[in-house]
Amino acid sequence: MYGTKAVYDIVVVGGGPAGALAAWAAADRGVSVLLIEKDREIGVPVRCAEGIAAATVKKFLDPDPQWVSAKIEGLRLYAPSGESIEFLEEGLGYVLERRVFDRELANRAAKAGADVWVSTCATGLMFDQDRLAGVRMASRGRDMTVRCRLVIAADGVESRVARWAKLRTMSSLRDLEVCTQYLLHNVAPEKGYCEFFVGEEIAPGGYAWVFPKGPDTANVGIGICGLYTRKRSSTDYLHEFIARWYPQSTPLAMVVGSVPVGVTLKEIVTDGVMIAGDAAHQVNPVSGGGIGTAMVAGEIAGRVGAEAIKAGDVSRNRLVRYPQEWEEVYGHYQKRAYRVKEAIHKLKDDTYNATAALLQRRNDVRLRDVFLTVLRHQPSLLIDVIRMFRK
Image 1 (tube, rainbow, N blue to C red):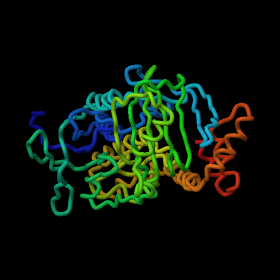
Image 2: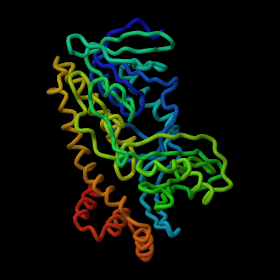
Image 3: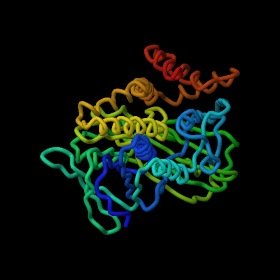
Image 4: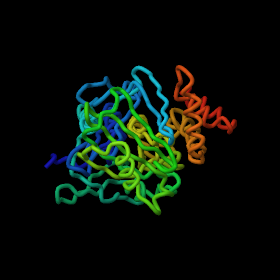
């Protein structure tokens, strides 16, 4: 089927950005790696608004028109009143074509020496006297076991691998954004702009977004705090939003999912196992963006994992270097962002409306100014905001 090899140094579960970067980083350091993806195609289905900061992409590869749907050079934030604030910054980011982008990341892993298997689902972990010995899999109707010394789990917020390894992954509804998104035709956002809409009636505890994908198509979605889904679904909120703003649009695709918007899990390694990306809750709590953070975390995990394999020590004590480096690179920032997110969730529509009215009178408004203005009555958070935008 894929060859006869059934022993690897590392098995990476999940072919998204975290898994692909982990496989790429590990294989590039000369260890044997198997990357498995449960779906038939890397990058499908797309469960993402597809936006990413340009600086993050450029850490790992040069932008390619094949997987860049649109360049982001401005943001437009709508208050509940309908008034908007604009921010312009050349080279701010990209709206990706995730199907192509994810495939390219997996291809980079393969070029570095990793084997990649699709339509392959992890069904359990295998242990030998309490030591990780391999991964049980189902692939195209065939059950098998692949032996390995280390598993990197990048299998999403619902990570089964983490649970099998007895790592706690539960998230409170408060720290979960429930999302619905359509790819809509006959939507023409201004070229280069991503738009965001806030308000208690629009998206309680979250926001709605419009990300351009082409001349007349856009990702239009909504994320709401899980606490509010008990009475009304994110899909209902999105339908109401579309009926108001884009009544003549046509849906071409739909995705539904959830995003962890807390802080990174307390334990993301144990003997022989590491978890990365959404599985480890490595997401920006304010924006819910997780592509870039997944890539950063995956690269660290793959690199640390390869070094552990070469040292002959995949114990928790050795692998803990991964969460330590993650904390230095992003963890401190994530904690500050989480405190800001919690404060934003308590804001009323009047505060957003007043902020929009105030900032509309100013020139050269930056996104940081919005946060500083909207949270001006909570001075304890202003330092967090300033440090967020210094990163």
